[in-house]
Length: 440
Image (cartoon, rainbow, N blue to C red):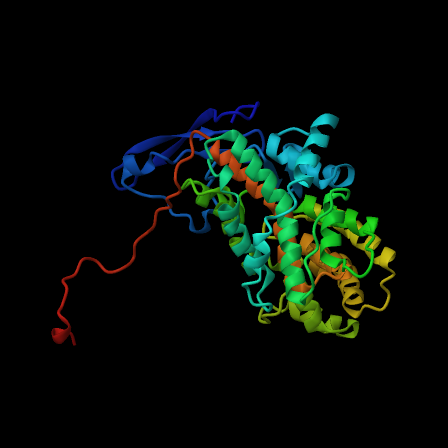
């Protein structure tokens, strides 16, 4: 990509030597505005009759993107060039949504119009109430929102033409606006409480908290500290480059599938415990430890290679330094706990003790096993009264705009084509069919 970030630019070549034939092949190398260069391997198969092998695609760039940049070694996360710490401190979630979708921060008029568009799309078709009631009350909220989001294509089929930029934007606004409403409905349904309709005079996060926790028999006043903490959680989870769920959205979108189906696919991928379930795993771990006096025992187990126990919420696959999102949420977590006056909550006290030890213990410091974003988001959500089963849903709410921005970028990329990974076949070679009466 050149410095304007608009197209790939060759900066040299990579020589591939085929030891079988002795031939050499020159492969183009492209440079980005930040991060490693990439070797263009698109013609390797045509030239060598070989595919490349990369399980999990961890060394393969499947696309170019101008949205999010990560440097795990340096602990850097930027949206459209803006450091995540600055956005979390100085911006708000809907402004970040605009940035991810459009590439630039909005001016005052653009922001007002965008916030208005999102706010006035928060209601859902009334028939969705009856559709949702078909789920068992015991259903996991992720199963519910995955099904309901996919079904939005049936209720809002007037904007499914992905070739029309205007329809893509309308679908984007609808998804960002309606996910909190759908999530709160799933929560209320599990409790047997009536659904709460959104209100246009509240902010995005205030509205969500009200739909989650208000009841018809009394007034509800959103707590500004909790609303701001939730806003930061959404900002910090808004996008994270080509992770599993984002890649799922892009792969589904490459087929021409409608945006509601693509986002539902992303939600399903996020549900996996190795991806979006980490903050839920943090609370499960705290419950397993049980009390502060057992912390030394579990710290010792965490250092034992032969013990299957692992400290959840510490370290990160991408960040080999301190997770930049965790630094933001650490402060926010303490603000929430102070505001709520949480003094006698055993799990939260335990979490704070784990944090203190991990930041001071030589083993964890040397291994760079610092508390990550999932550790602190789990603490905040627990303090807010959000049940563990809803934790991954909260992740999905924040990540929806990132999925949409990535989907939109893919649709508008002339180089993209339907996803079709290759394989190294290791099964049986051709063999003859044997009638059943002759098989041994």
